Length: 335
Image 1 (cartoon, rainbow, N blue to C red):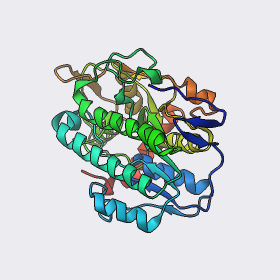
Image 2 (cartoon, helix red, strand yellow):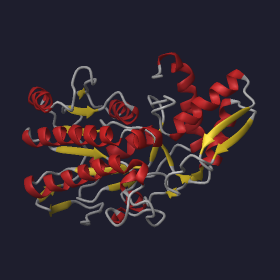
Image 3 (cartoon, rainbow, N blue to C red):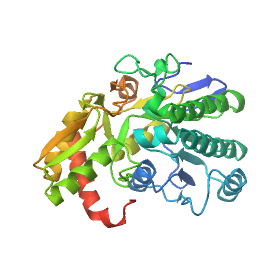
Image 4 (tube, rainbow, N blue to C red):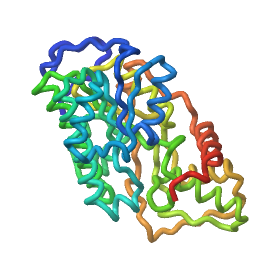
């Protein structure tokens, strides 16, 4: 992969001439996926930073898989800045069960948005990927140059391929059209507006719901998938949103930037913490017939640190905030 991580102004890298600087707070800023976990956090961060013209559309209002509708939306709103946080996402079960959906939907969403942004001359675009783009047995912590150096984790390879295509699409736009666009690869995210569905959620919201329901029902045990031994890194969505704005204002280059905390815990440890947060006092059991997924996935965030950003929300504090949000919104969550 091409290099380009630097805190200093970038001039004529891949044909791009752009000096990272504070964004215009009055410019039209489109957040694709503004109601989701990441998108809603980005909207909150932009509002707190003083942006006055933030645009978003629910999927019922704009289907980003519809190319003509997406292009028409860009023609109408003419955004100067875009964060592409819209995606079809899910946990191991969903990814493993519906790989065609995860590949097809995500390819169409990101291709339509990126092509429309090219056609309507968007100045700055941030594409959000996922740490699953890296090989299953990548070195730990995972540096950005591990991309495309080994086999992917089979349980979510379709989603990973879609996100890799998005990174390459951004790099191609830089080379062919001179776009000052960037990509960020977050670690496992959690926070308000997450998907807590038992069948479609990622590990952390699934555990919060499972343990909360067990605590309320007085269940004696909770059963989780796998052995509990895999190590995972978790980042609160508010920290992710802050990192996105920081990158837009301080980084330009073709290489995707890892975004995380730089520390990880085992799934067993996270389950114990969530049990404590939710008040569950029973026994945790592990179904070892179910897959563990990648044994460890810790991002090397040294480049992001060099750019002047580090995570601020501790895991326990973030879990308490997320559980509180879950309790307040349980009646309206996706089943």
